[in-house]
Structures are given as structure tokens and as C-alpha cells.
Length: 302
Ligand SMILES: C[S@@+](CC[C@H](N)C(=O)[O-])C[C@H]1O[C@@H](n2cnc3c(N)ncnc32)[C@H](O)[C@@H]1O
Image 1 (spheres, rainbow, N blue to C red):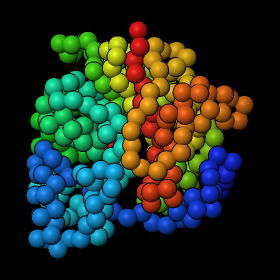
Image 2 (cartoon, rainbow, N blue to C red):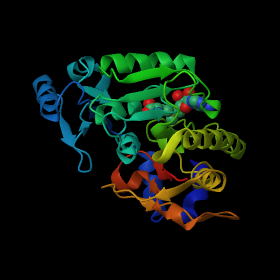
Image 3 (tube, helix red, strand yellow):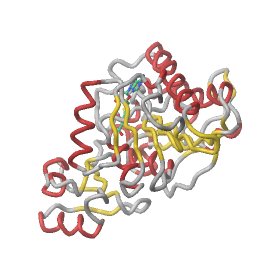
Image 4 (cartoon, protein in one colour):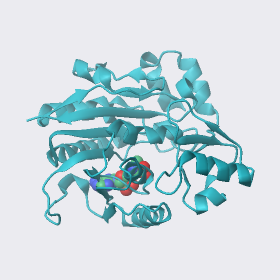
């Protein structure tokens, strides 16, 4: 847990943050509205005798009273998908519309890509890409089980992604749910910080910058790009978005989210960030009893 000490200066109520990081995380599922309404999925859970609580910010997310959300009848039939509560935030911020073309740059194992397809009523095109072939099979399995027929899978490095295979040359929206140092998953995975190092953060930040830049380049003017990580490190969050602001035509925009969160940072160490980064969300585990996440919303400009 020692690496987390570096965040003492930026987190209000740091002791509550540390205590939350030491508590195991509960189980959550997202109702897959491609296959079942929330009413039908909750009725199925009741029939199975699986207890659940609805969360206030999203009617499609349920906290379950079981450690095995993937072993329920509802999951087997694709009515629900085990997904950490806060991991359901980025697609909501992306806010895709039915019929659009959406690129999920780092999509495996597909929790957010299938959520995007559901938010689009499975109409339009979701290109779910990941550079890790081993993880692609889980992505395909989840898309099949959840009945996401609008989803196409590709296996490329998102940093130099080519659209030449498509009959269109830009997306309406893109999600960069980036590979990261995963500090915010400490409640689910107590070993998450075992191999933590500043060198690793610096190396993954380079990859994140490349993917976010390509996502902005591949999205139409006026389109939306959401950048998210499950880590607290400003080098992987605000600094990556700042790099995109410096190098690409885009701006940070505000969004509504009915959860408690802290604003994005405008400085870290010796680096200053654009004041618009305050519109990003830093979701800490103690605020909503979840894992940790960072989310920023960008609009592509001319
Ligand atoms: C945080 S995980 C994505 C989780 C996924 N969005 C979901 O909700 O299920 C990050 C993913 O990025 C992929 N990745 C890492 N480097 C990449 C790159 N250069 N291009 C594309 N994908 C990459 C990893 O294989 C990993 O599956």
C-alpha cells in the first residue's frame, strides 16, 4: 500500500481513502439490456434467490449478494454481466447514440464494449479492438453471450490503427480505457501494487499518450473521446490528457455523473495542467464504496 502514500497531498480524507483501499470490494453486475430489461433481470435474480441492491447513479447496475456473479442463471443467459460498478462509468460518459460508429480502442475482455452496444440498442457499429490476442477470445465470448451483434472485433495496436478496412474514415466516438498501473483495483486484487514502480508508470504513460492521440485523430470533428483508467497516478491521467491537448485538436468538456468524485488535478509535481482538466473525474474508493477510476471527456475540435 506504500505507493499510495504519494497521493496524501491530493486526496481529501486520506485516512478514509486508505481504509477503503484495505476493504474487499463487493460484487456488481450490469444488466445487459440487449437481452433483458432491468425488471426482467431482477425478477430472474429473485427467482434464483440471489440478493441485490440497485445503485443510485445507474439503474442498470446492481450490487449482488454473491461472490460468483458469473455463475448465476442470469449471467449464463446473458441477462447480466459481472462488471465492477465504477467500470460502468466511462461508457455512460461517452453517451453513444444508436446508429453511431464507435471505436473501443482497448476493449478486451469487453465489459465496456458490450455496455456501449447496449447503450446504442445494439444498432450502429462498435469496433472493439485490443492488441492482446489472448484477451480477444474473452471479448468474443462475452459479445456472443450478451448478444451484441453490432460489435466487430479487431486485433491491432491502437497507436497506429488503420481504418482502411472500413468503408468509413472516422468514428463518431471513441473510448480509450487504457492499460494502466491499476492502482484503483487494489480492493479487488490485493497484489495490484506488488510490482509498482515509477518506471512502469512512465512506460505505460507513453503507450496511453499514443493511444489517446490516435483515438482523437480517428474521431470526427465534434465527436467525443473518453479517456479512462483504473489508476490514481496523475502521470497516467491528467498528464496524458494534457499531452493530447498540446498535440491534437481537442478540448476537455464537462459531463454529468451522479456519483461523488474529486475534480481532475491542475498540477502534479512540477507540471501544471490546463484548468479545463478540473472537469475530469477522480473517483476514489472511499467516496462511493467502489474501486478507483479516472475519467475525462474530450470533444474533437477543428
Ligand atoms: C483496462 S484493459 C481494458 C478493459 C476493457 N475496456 C473492458 O472494459 O473490458 C486495457 C486493455 O488494453 C489492451 N492494450 C494494451 N496496449 C494496447 C495497445 N497498444 N493497443 C490496443 N490495446 C492495448 C490490453 O490488452 C487490455 O486488454
